[in-house]
Length: 241
Length: 212
Image (cartoon, rainbow over all chains, first blue to last red; front, side, top):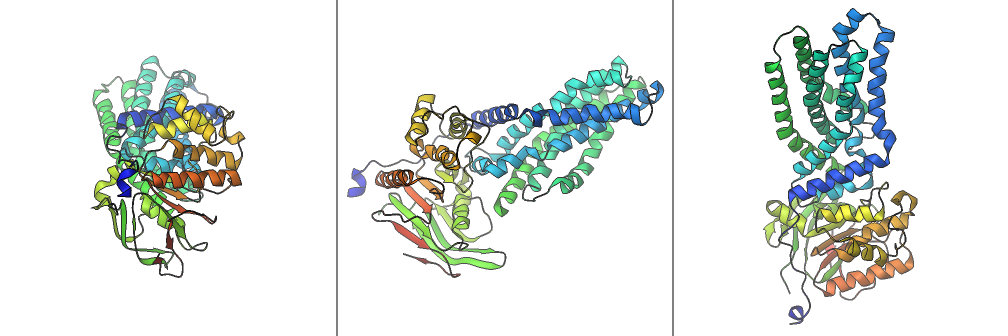
């Protein structure tokens, strides 16, 4: 018949692998972020400002800052990650890139993981890199600074991953800010407690091995579970949009 | 008649306690262009989003090549191309970067091919201009450039003619017709007058729906 004569478009059997697709998502997010530098600087500036306001607003005493410094840095880092979360999916949602992402043949949770990793590289990692400077500013000792950096290095990816769930859930709302904070802060508290607890233990000269192991367990849990939850939340948000 | 790619049986969708359509059954077979018709608010976009798998608020059966779509989701997504109201173009990236990123997930292409596709939609000379400096129509053309190199058997196109000039509309019509002749299946929603031979229609509106 006629149908046999014409060239037939064949179903596609082999697609692009998940890893290649993750790399593409990651690379695009970094490229977009570097085109919009003020979005990159915002969380960093916020971090520096909050930390430098404490000596001015509370007390510049060395004893106070040595005691509270690690906590101040952790809280400031947590808030600055929270501040940047709304950007994680919002722009993609508005311009339709997110629809295309959800419709990609690769598993969505892997693509979400790639996006979250890019988000951490752009917000969490710079905070960790700035921490030694700010640590010196609030009179932390060398050992404490090292442990502080380590806890933030393990802790900030957890913050990004948990935050991705909240950002995905509140995507359909016009002003998600308050709800996002309310949803996410309770889940951030354990990370904060163990993060600052580790530094306090190090300052007392105790062994931090157990603390660090526990934080690493948080990270493993977040990496394995949060992308699934965030991917499911994205589907729900898009379904209503 | 060849085997239908996508088959809908008794689709029903409610939105805000209003029934958009019920008992909607149709098949999308290779080699056809199907147009979804209906007044504003009759659920054309919703139907297309349901078919694409973006909207889950529906009941009924959707089958891809005879299998329930939910059980062959990955295969379905690999073989389906959806272009929505929002073109999926990042305004900070150039047309070239956008197209490369979109194709990277499906079928990576050498830059020459991408450049040709952009030229084919009238964007030669704009390859490396950030998309936010382009007009609305040009941004849509970046998304449409995908159609020139896409090989997915099923295309779902929502209002593709928005902001496109008359020549562009003609070019897309020709492309869709050619696509159908090659054995692809296309579903479009549009308010433009499409003149194509053998075009199928799905008419929405008034709660119930008829297929022609």
